[in-house]
Image 1 (cartoon, rainbow, N blue to C red):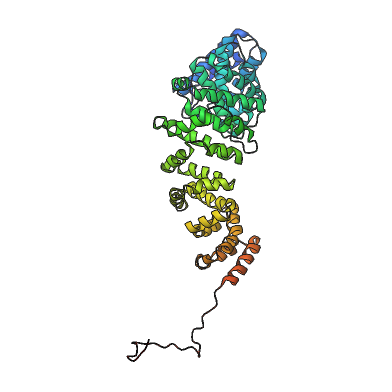
Image 2 (cartoon, rainbow, N blue to C red):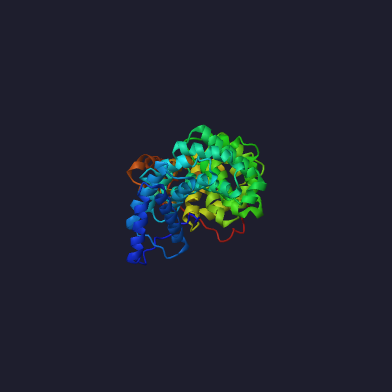
Length: 470
Ligand SMILES: [Zn+2]
């Protein structure tokens, strides 16, 4: 069997006419109603398509692909094949779905997933495993194919199989995990709550079983799958399901802090970040985990995690005043690091850092805002107002006046930074905010000192008079 890696279609050679003739012969056999002929053709094509990936000489022109696809699917649907024939047929699908998007779509548009959903439940483990492999390849093709694989019936079957996967050999079990991981990559997968609960519970138990995880070397894959399962913003009950798994979050935190588990760090951090996206109560649970602050500190000290941890911070401070406290308790370390993000050349780090500023300003109470002003947050208002993101511009524009009203001694800085000009440049939709700020700036404007008032005299003593009694 070949791996699922996508290979460019080999178009460099044109097969001799005799080869084309042979392939035509096998295609004709595949289309016959004789079980022996069909089985022989399936065996031939299984070998031929596997050899594409091995770099051998057998080349099947794409003019045959549609007929082969029809022949393979008809053979599977007709139920004339023995189990070896079925395995060969699914094996062909597995390999053809690695050739190109066009070929994969030929199969998907002919309802191959319905056929595979039937075969995956076969009592023959080889046939079931080969079907899983084919589905894994199809789901890795493109977003549309992945969405097709997220059919409720298939997800339900896969969740059941995963529940019982301790009965499988390690290779087959890993294959199943990889298939589910491919289908759920990208998050936002809708599924029935019992199916989601089953996935979350089984993957949680799996990641906590360190012996099995090490043996199968699949910690990152399991963590990514869990992260994708809870990556669905309109359904935070998934995060509840995750947080109700005993010791799971603690274990993920420790994995991130373990230097020997580096390959799992990115996935562990994403999983923790997806919890921080949840409700205020869910974030509370995360922040009260003893080692969670160390996770943030560690991530802040490693450049490859900067963008991710900035995104996590922006979500933490997006919720409740008490979460802003959590961040400000650590202000010395945090604020310097935030400054480096705002001034970073890395676009995502800068973007997430500005979101931290925007969310901090929107969430903080009056006392917290005064702390932020002392740190110099006013200096970043122009960054928010000039950034190419309407939601950040809005956060800057609506808080600018309030901040100045609470901290009128920032007047000079507002003038120097031309914050009014920044709001003006955003366009007429911010005319209300501009007018409010303009009015406040006018109120705060200090009285002008008369430069050369005729009545004003300055008496300058170079020395005190000698007879002074002062
Ligand atoms: Zn596709």
